[in-house]
Length: 74
Image (tube, rainbow, N blue to C red; front, side):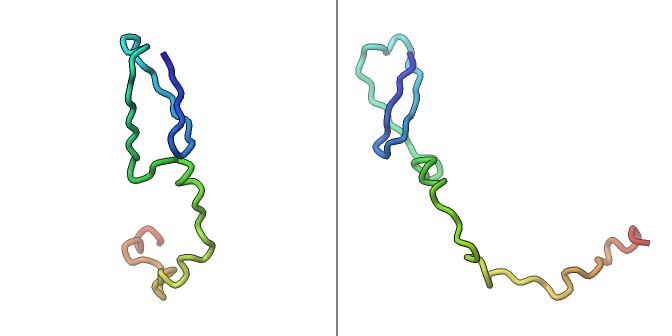
């Protein structure tokens, strides 16, 4: 039997309950995965444009040819 439940955060969760438990009182415990209790919580946070500005620096010779590939570039 398939049952649908609402979590305290309002998220709908679907469970398949074995026939031998239909009509009995069940306690269902939902554990968060990786600290995220709801997929909607995760998707609501959008990154702020430019939030990583100044955190990364590229080397001056970033675009320079690599010595390791010299023989392939002949």
